[in-house]
Image (cartoon, rainbow, N blue to C red; front, top):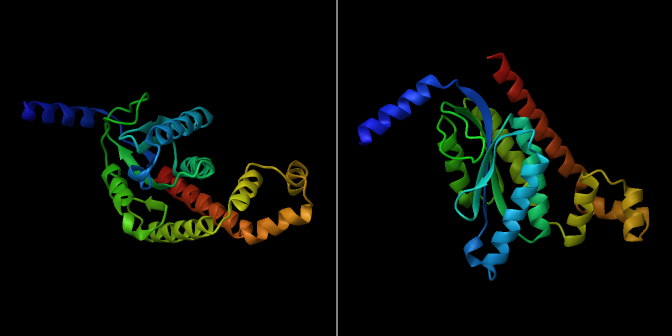
Length: 233
């Protein structure tokens, strides 16, 4: 039976077109220590459902919770993956939920499952999973880039920088920076909070807003360049 299953799998892989995509993976940090696991599970599901709706045009296979505290999804491109990860991180932080992420390049050689992100095979998936399981680094943003170790190393370094900035935020800094990233101006945020614009800029500065957004821009630009290179190959 195993031999027959393997033959069938190899046939499907051989007959399916190779698709170069991006995978987004993540898992909740120390979820097993949560004092309210049912509430954590419900909040996690709510965020995943919201992002699947928001980014449905970028997702090839939706963000899917696989083991209760882990998820994965397939995205059209590496550049499309970055805002999904950032959005999920900020939404989970607002609920005091810590999560680590991986953005990886993959080549899917089986049929795409458009309903759930599982039961697919191809180079890059297991490597991204290995990255996710490397928990001793402390960085919450990991990258797995096929055939480009230099780009992968640089992206990993930027991801470590993002993690360090976020871990230094107060709740107010996180709230303000999240609002500014969503497009609210300093004046609009000041009015909403009933404080001076100067106060908002103080929070921006103390929360390293400029460095934070610059690093996300660098990640987006690097991933877009990798996507263009893949399209040319």
